[in-house]
Amino acid sequence: MANNIKIKTNVRSVYKDIIKSNKGLANEIKKIVDKKSLKIQTEAIKEFNFHPVTKEIDRGPNASNTSGLTGGYGNLFSFIGFEYSDKPTIPIKAILNKKIENKIGRISNSGKFNVNFLIPSRSEIYNVTPLPWASGSSWAEGIEKGIGNLGSFIYSSRSVSGSRSGSGIQTQKKEALTFKTTSYISKLLEDLRKKLKNL
Image (cartoon, rainbow, N blue to C red):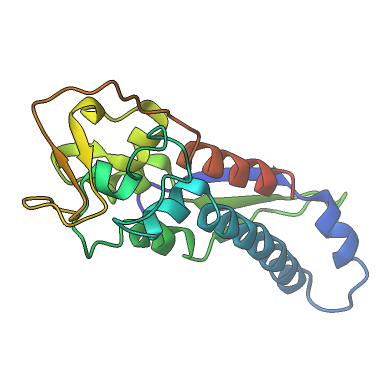
């Protein structure tokens, strides 16, 4: 993945496990690092799946605004303007589920060594989360920085003619509505980076 981020970390704790083994040093390092990084990756995937934004969007056009980002009015799926049958979070989940590759550096006489991890970047995720009505913009990024036109958004739990989602539509009429931003992809990836660095 061209947009992946490389992380270097000094893995001292791993070495303590390695010296107890009679097997090849390189193989033992690989096994332990893979196991530890997989655990961290699994935690990150779980965090994403249970994030209020992910859960609300996954529930589709008739979801309740449990995230609170649209002030309890309508829901994120309809506001963003997804097609009724869209599954917007699947491309993100596909990226997060890819195995985190790592490369073990040279081991010093004192037992210290570096591990390079390749993890997804924000731009990689933003590239697979386009706003349906704004080419070049990402809805995942908009969750953190803001999405316009909420003041023109009308939601109905019943089918709305001309609506992509079937439950929301943009109009010329302005309403006193606001969109509340929240941390999402940026925090997820930063937490992943920190945990791998401190592995």
